[in-house]
Amino acid sequence: MTKLPTTIDPRTAAGMLQHWGFLAHADVSGQEGPSFLLVAIRPRPTLEHYDPERIDFWVTERGQGIPATMDGLSQMPVDDSTTWGMIRVVDRLRVTNEWLSFGGRLTAEKVDGAVIAVFTSSAPLLRRGGHSQGWDKAAPSVAAFFAKVRAAAGVDHPFEVLEAAADPLARYSCFVADFARRYRHSEMLRKLDPELWQVVGHEERRMRDHDPLAWQAGGRLLDALDAAAGGRAPGNGAVHP
Image (tube, rainbow, N blue to C red; front, side):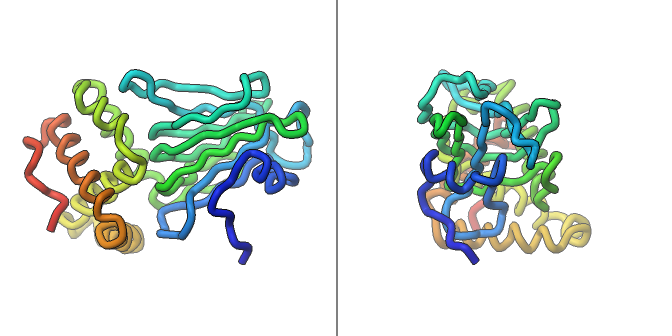
């Protein structure tokens, strides 16, 4: 198996994208190294593969998540943070491929006339279907979690600010803790999808054992999410054994 680079800049990504419109790694699996999405926006379609022309994603401004777009005319270079939400790649026919991200870093520059964009994150990146890919198993659960976060942020600005400032691994830990809590209290859910329960249970143990600070930050974020959603007062420590 080819060893993945631990850091990827746009020029390195350009070489990896020589025969592709995009490359992505990785889902909820505890794999080593960062997750990434590499996208090449070329001046003209190659007609040999999926040819991206636009990328839609989310950034944070003044404590609020706002949509952002990159295309072949965007000012380069770019080096900025991204926040949680969907990353959507669109081609000239408006055909899309989509991913779910817990936030991270975006670097981009022009390489040999093409805009090369590199999304990286310490947290997993999940495929949400599209023209050239399927769905990662946990993607529907992450999409539902993001909807819950969005609803809470819409009615509770302090929570919105707190969540916007969170580290990607804290957001991921919040998702894992929320998912594990729901499945732990529902035998029906565990029976409906035992494979997914096993994967997320593994992630719960991995985060708790190998990144306790991110796990604790995720627990505090989940407390705030519960309070914003009207579930309970913060500080009850629901994700801690």
